[in-house]
Image (cartoon, rainbow, N blue to C red; front, side, top):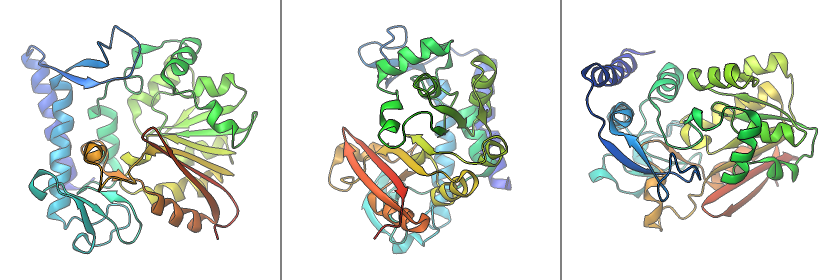
Length: 319
């Protein structure tokens, strides 16, 4: 971890620790949450303590500022920022979104491309309402299966179109494993890879799920896999191409199935402005997937529906 990364991380932790020691009354904010659980949801909104969001926002400010200071280069491939088109101005130009002319991603300024800084962020600072981070929403696999079906997060039907049971599936960015029990119940052999140590350990210890810290660790138990699955994960990863290549080389998946927010109309539709920002440094485009498919010598099936983009990579070289 570089000196700058250590300073930012420690400053963020210090803010959270100070608020806790002072015992400040939580300032509550509303954030969108589609969870049907009324305990956590009031008319489509969740109430979240502001101090739980503050350290993450400080980290984002430092991350974006460092990205601007270092030239606003593409965090995925490194192409110089001043040669990439600005597709939407944000925050008086400080966090404007650019389209990389080399790899095709949309991106905001990013200072921390990976390593321990991001691992620490997603382990201790990343807070978002809903099942992905609210680990007390489901304590047993059976309860989790019902909740996932109710929230539309059961991915077994989607994967079945690509590879039927009993195929093996690696759920990349699985958090504490909430997508895994429905896949197992459908007859798949499912395991996960998760960067966040806190969520990974919760899934391992509380639910007994096979979740690994890295692709290399997973490979020791699963030398190959039929499907690499991710759901609203890739837009969080600045060095995305390198991460996908690492997964592909380690686990040799026959198929890739990836869901991300749709950004094809980002420059035209103002309602999509928030899709790329604090939590999402990248917008994953069709152009990116076309280049990635060629790189992996696979064919691409790309579709969009209800604000989501689905990229399926199959064996065979893209023409």
